Structures are given as C-alpha cells and as structure tokens.
Image (cartoon, rainbow, N blue to C red; front, side, top):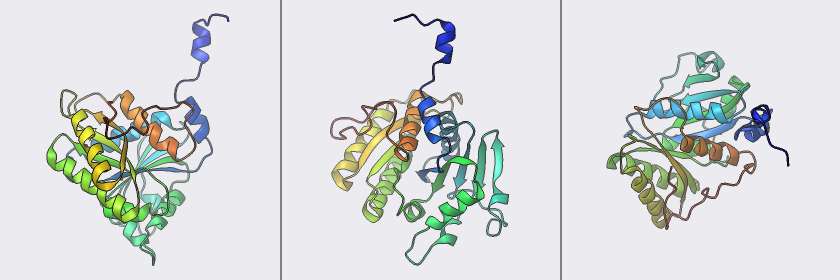
Length: 261
C-alpha cells in the first residue's frame, strides 16, 4: 500500500462528505425543537444549531430557522410567507412564525399543512429548524417521523420543563425518541448528570429514550463543537438513510448512563 502525501490527504473527503452527497437534491429535512421558556439563551441555541446544520448539510442548500415560539410574524405572513423570510447569513435564513402553525390546523387537529407551506415558501432550503411550543410541535409532526430536540439549561426549572415537554410528546403524540441540547457553561459539572437523570426519568416514567445529547457554552466561540455536530448528524441522518459511519452511542441504554459530549 502506498503512502499518502499531503496532496493526497487534501483530496480525501471530510467526515460530512457522505451526508452532503446524500442530501444533494433531497427533500427538505425538518429538525423539531421543543421550546423551553426556562432556557434563557434559546435564541443562541438555535443559532448554534443552525451553524452545525450548515456544516453537516449540503453547502448549496440553505438552512432556515422557523421560530414559532418567540418570533412575532410579519403582517404579510398570512398572504406571502416567502416574502417574510429574512436572510441572516450567506446560507442562513430566518422566519418569525409565532402562531402561524395553528392557522394551518385541519379537521383532525394536525398542523402539517404549515410544513408544506414552509417548503413551498423556501424551495432552496435543505434544513428547516422549527422551534415551537410543544403543543404545536406535536400537531406539526403527528404524521411525520421525527426525533424532537429538547432544550434545557443547568438549573432545575429548565430540566423539569424539558421532561414535561418530552412526556407530553410521548404520551399524547407517540413520539418516543428524543435528543437533548444543554445550554451551560463549559465549566459546569452538572451537565453530564442532568443528561443522565433525564434519560433515566424518560425510560422509567414515559417509556421514552434519550438517544444523544450535547452541551453548548453561551460564552464560548461560535465554532461548532464536535458533540453538537454529532447530534445534528444524527438528527438529519435519521430522516434520510442510515449513516455512512456507525455510531455506537446512538441508542444508549438510559439505565446505564447517558452519552457524554
């Protein structure tokens, strides 16, 4: 076997190359994020999540953050949704959409029509990060398989709210697998324990599984940490096809220990 020189190594695909090729020409992927009113830096969490999605997904396709929890929609949203999408960065767009999902509710109580409207309004988008109250999130994804992303911080009220979100989605809408994004200082010693306890509680009292988790530090640089990239790869890959590389930590037994970032 010949040795690789520097030019050879430069031609090798990076870890996300398989996903980029997989996503080329594919339909829009949705990441469902359960809003948590007790997380102070929810907006920053969405920003970091979008940055990670931009790294993982196809560069030619945009990432759209739809905020149906905090962003008050433009008055034109009911008439022309596309006109209300704001470009925020070269590959990142934003849509304030508080209350808009309920305008698309059908006779069965589903808001899935809003997802169709978003796809029509942003045809070049590869990933839509949809941040919504848990009551709307369940109606949006009642008929679309998804792994909701829970938000929490390193204080009890936010963890309690994250568990309540998970329990409602599991018991009312049958969504049984979740991921977790913790917003906490890098020096906090509590983050692994929070993830572990949430995984144990999910298993014992809701029959649900916490597959994976990551933590972000609000005070840290905007560089995408490895744990967050891994989390996003799992969220996007599950909506498309099996991942090119196996992940031994995808579905840990929550009775043993949650996955460390």
